[in-house]
Length: 208
Image (cartoon, rainbow, N blue to C red; front, side, top):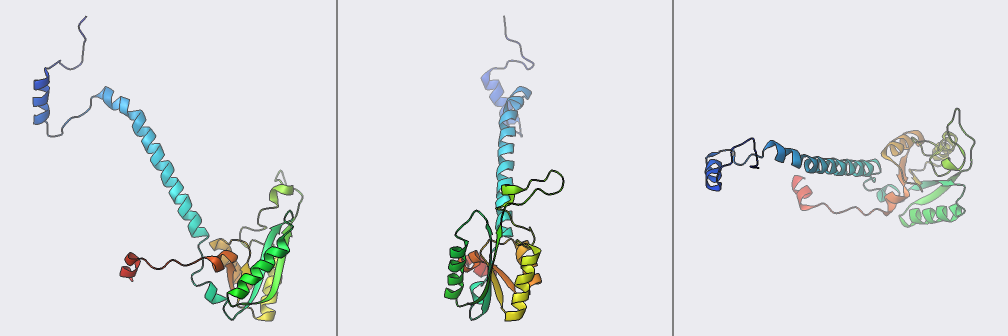
């Protein structure tokens, strides 16, 4: 049985001649387009997955962006230090001592420290979980610590005239802004003191 086709069977030299006259070049037939569809769809899905990953990574970097010149904000300045720890951690005192040493080595004077430990709490209203599931979480997405503890820190800042408060915990941009406004001085993270600012590149220097 002779094979059938929707297009006439032309010799190779005739097909090449037709391709040379076609300005659009080779155009795949419907079946070839259909067979390539799964590969194209897979490539598109991979592209979108990588794009979302880059966007999330960039968003995380923006949320926890360091404060330029953070070390200069504590030099010859009275500083308060604070830390939120899970009740499971038994070394919080040593960690706060290490934070105080970092502030001192950066030229600051520690005039007060505040520690809040989050223990096991009961469940909230409805079916919201409590207990150990919350021990490693901030008390507040806006202020990290509880409202009462932040008020204590703000009162100490007003009494001592401290120029900065350094938290042991990493701070988001939202937390940094809220804490600076509530406490009344620069709110920094321990990581801000340890980050080394990269020198400007030739491209950024050219823009300046």
